Amino acid sequence: MKNNTRIRVSKQPLVLRYPSDQEATIWLKRRQGTPPSVIADDLGVTRAYVSKSLRKAEKKIGSLLEHAAAINRIKLHHISSKHGMAVGYCAAYKSETVITYSPNLGIQVWFEHRGDCSSCADIDQCTALIASLSTEWNVPIIRNAPALVLVNDLLNTIMKRLEWRN
Image (tube, rainbow, N blue to C red; front, top):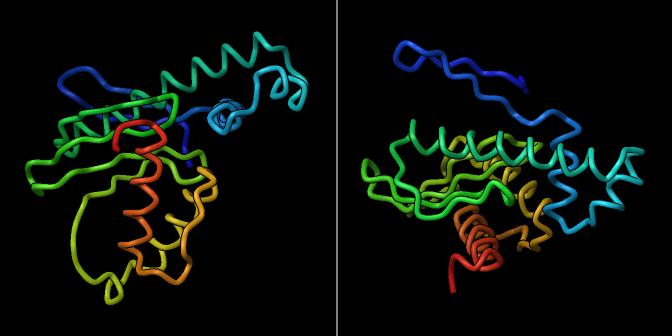
C-alpha cells in the first residue's frame, strides 16, 4: 500500500497520506487498549514518540475518512480518527454507510444493502475483509453465516462499542 496518493482538486493538489508502518502499529495497539508506556517499551521508543506518532496517525486517518466520505458523497453523522471509523448517509444509494480504516486493509466503504451475497463474484474478498476487521476489533463472528449477516453484526457491534448505536 502506498503512503502517498495525489488527487487533483481545483487548482491545488491534495496529498493524502496513510500512516507510516510504525504510526499504524502504534495507532492499532492504542485502539486495542495497550497503554502508551507498554507500546513504547515494546517498540524501544519513548512515550513522547508514541504520543507524537499517535497524533500524526489520527490526523492522517481523519483526513482519509473525510476524503472517502467526500468522494462518495456521504454526509457523515459520526467520525472517529481514534477508532478509524465514520458513519453517514449516502443519498445516491439511499443507504447508511460505514467507512473503516485498518492498517492492514486501508480504507473500506460499506454501503448498507440487502440481498443474497452468495452469488456475488466478490464474496471471498468480502468475507476475508470481514474476518480481518473482526480480528482487529476482537469481535467474534460466526464463520459460516452469510457475509451480509457477518458484516452487519460486526459493524453494529463496533458502533455499539463506540456508543453510536444502542
